[in-house]
Image 1 (tube, one colour):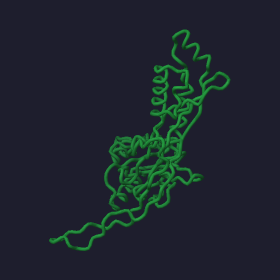
Image 2 (cartoon, helix red, strand yellow):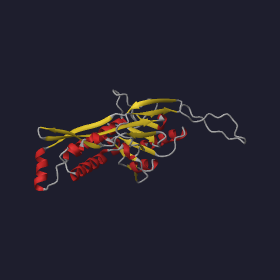
Image 3 (cartoon, one colour):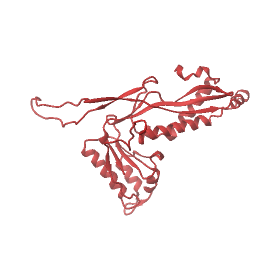
Image 4 (cartoon, one colour):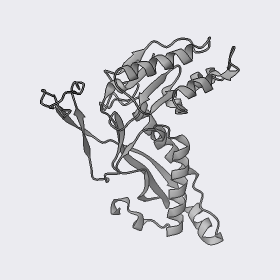
Length: 278
């Protein structure tokens, strides 16, 4: 990957490995969307757009003896191409820290790398869950055409359990089966940390059982938000051109500038596979 300009940097191979490790470890602590969305790629940094297909209305299958009944096949009825955005954050490593590492054999200070990677990871999740209306990108909570359910007060009774059960029932009724995933705001996650009267169970555990353990919290949702999705790849996937990586930008006043970057896009193929609790 010559575009990363790593050969121009004054870092040893071992130091680049440490940079990559710090980047990956920091991003993994933040990322939520990637824990349940199937990845499509990586396709390469040069891939700038991807198709999103519309399958129209899918009819039920037929059953007869000769198999000669008229049948409408599942096929693409519309296709549009969407640009894959780049997520990035720049950082600087001090030349004095680099010299200290070289002279004394001490580890290079990589806190700026970890911090920039965490910022990129948070931005990735914001694109996945919230989209970016200014750029024309839809997220799980902001896409038009998704199913919506009025959220009850999850601090009372078994409202949370009933809401999620209702959402799953709605997905199944429309033919969406497979991996159900629930992502909630941190304050809703805390509201589930209570014993449900008469059961001896946390409301959190009851809700988690409905989605086979696929329950996550994410700060990017803000407050009082929840989204349930049938996270099969025929419904949604995460397109990755270039996975998160560090590139060398050059030196300025002896200090060394790097950029953490990735190119990613949430591809929503079947919007009714998403239930937003409002």
